[in-house]
Image 1 (cartoon, rainbow, N blue to C red):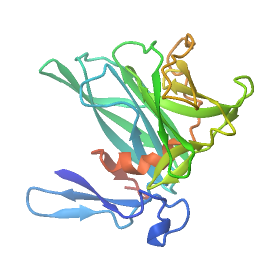
Image 2 (cartoon, rainbow, N blue to C red):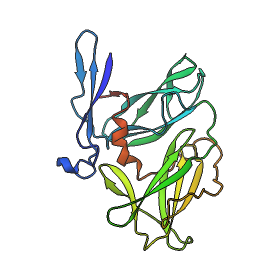
Image 3 (cartoon, rainbow, N blue to C red):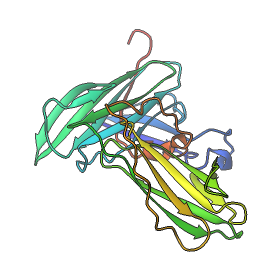
Length: 271
């Protein structure tokens, strides 16, 4: 059997340009096609805001660890089966927040399937890793001129382990007191814009799914920043970032979830 996710319009800009309500991030409908020519599809089309999956790290075999944020804001329990490929094979990788339902090794890589049961209203971060993630994210930024005379701050954040769970942008006029800069949303993506007449400095903070943190400082006026962050702090032990809540993740989740081959089984009644 082959499962496909057919997406419906709205996930790129909260659905407002399609006449949908504010906060509607689009919908997807699970289809299952069998070799005998029959098919099945879900009778309802879940909203990405109600149920979805976001991989925080590439799951193509380039990393030794992957974190996945999953959520179910619907009225029924759901079961998600999540595919992951890690950089090498270990029959017993460390898994948090899910059950390891399959493990295979081929061409030096490790292919895994994780099974997650989510109750109504539940959200969690699932993790699978071959070794603990102790390295903080790496942060840089680009500055661009906006058409209205402001500066645009474009964060560039990477993580070699589980993946980035949260990042924020702050601005300051005196490099002493800082205010969080809320992004503007364009075509579903956050854009940070600031007037150089009001603020001179900016700071970006990031935390990965293991709780490792990093900072980056830059100057808004003048050329693009070439400064580096102070020594980042590391919170020991896996799972340190599980309590972090990002107000940015949901804006991009609609785009991420539709690209993921997630096997979704909806439990109804006694089935």
